[in-house]
Length: 336
Image 1 (cartoon, rainbow, N blue to C red):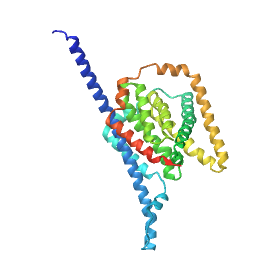
Image 2: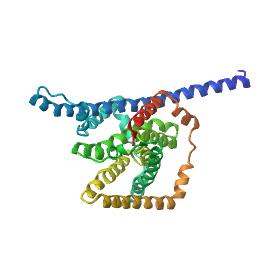
Image 3: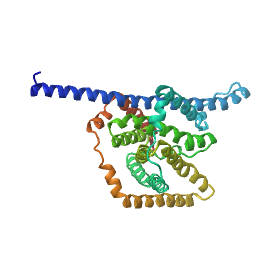
């Protein structure tokens, strides 16, 4: 058999690279489209639940006064935010993923066992997870100031995106259902789908999509940074530990701290919240300094695949998700 000449070898190399890039885009596109479908279903379900609430408030008025002309905008403003729409999508989404991937995938991929978690490691990653809030708050403040220069603001959606649970259903969703579902979806399905192309790439890619999925300048930076920590925990230990950390984060910062400080003045609330966030921030910095050698060694274990990184952002699913989230971002930005 005659050896291939250099030109033919080069052409074969180009063909293989083209096929590999096509394979990468197809794989990543499935991940992106899955998140797009999930996002659309979630927003649809939430809108349906809110419409039911509007109709429930409107019917007694119509019965009492047949000539009543409802103000749809006013009624929508009084619609009670609740988590039943989110919970409904969570149940449906997990069931579809179970049927689609099968029990073996859940057992061997999503809930794959890793290293045993120690008390010291858990405290360290918990401190970093909560301490990231400080960096995210500073970044969000800078972004808000930049928007203010153009007469725009994101602060109008701060309360609605802070995770505060105003009802029992929202408490159940924000503190339990959301952490479980998001970890299964992002650190389970998404990260495991990306992991064949490198552990670091999988952690980074899942964190990018996790941040993007939140769709606003208030939560996106924080979600990305927390996603890196949760991704590390899921990759090295177990997705269940990522769920526990996510629950602790949501309960402490999104619900428990709010409930504890609700009985005191607004000024004192800001002071208490600030001390808590700064305290965890300091703890996170100390831990990162002490563990800098171990962190550096972990980051040097493998190089991120540039081909995977490039094709991660240029496929139909991820591009569609990005456009959808950018559209949501523009809708949330309001004039001052």
